[in-house]
Image 1 (spheres, rainbow, N blue to C red):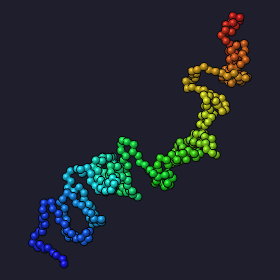
Image 2 (image 1 turned 30 degrees about the vertical axis):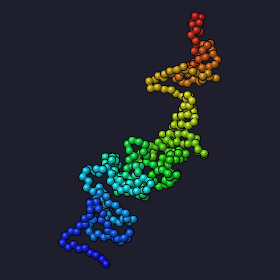
Image 3 (image 1 turned 90 degrees about the horizontal axis):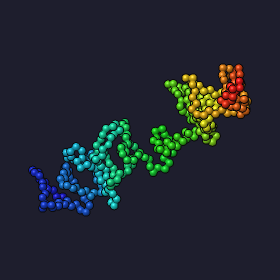
Image 4 (image 1 turned 45 degrees about the vertical axis):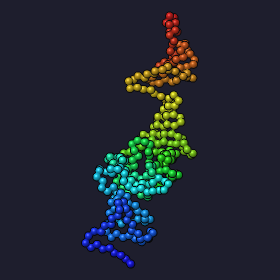
Length: 318
């Protein structure tokens, strides 16, 4: 039979000895205690041993009554006991300072930990509400943004919005180099590619010879390959300047060409033809009366330059 204690004109209070215990005994883990009004617990510790805890309120307040600017005890959050393993915690940590994606200095952040170490977070989507997502690994140290423990992650990058890793970028660049030709150095006029630019070719199976070509106004003017540098009809290779055809002309705006070393003339097998308006100097292995082997020719005469000793002898004779 139910028993009811009714106090119609005042409060009801149960007092035990100092430090005593009040027990509402409904049996060994059976029955219910129902409180139809608010429950206020003023002790330092509240222990709930229920296997299922249901809370209807949509917000749970922690660190209630804080009077300081921030959490005075530095941390506030939830701790999960893990038996013989380190506890897992979800904490608001006031000791964390950082700069957000907008360049603002911030104080405090959520921290997921396993003991004193950072804990993992498994989720499928992070939504910023339209703002930037900033990964701050700290101004010092060696922290990086990494996709780890994922074999061949680079092979999964197939969409334009996928984030690549270092391996994917390396493979992508090497694949571009392996494809001949690689376009580059092109000049654009607004949105139209003009006929001035350069291309690089690599040596792969079936590819053309390795080289870099530069064209100006539709004509190839410079080529770099295993035979040296070609500019128009001039080739620079192994400390030698040669022409593919025609003659080589050295000119200067001040009408002076300096040679800052010994000038060596290769012996010619035959005398070169004269050229109008020019004196041609050449060397021959067969010396003439001048005993120098240095000859000149022009449109009026051809002769050998005479040595100083022979010039003295000739001056005494003639």
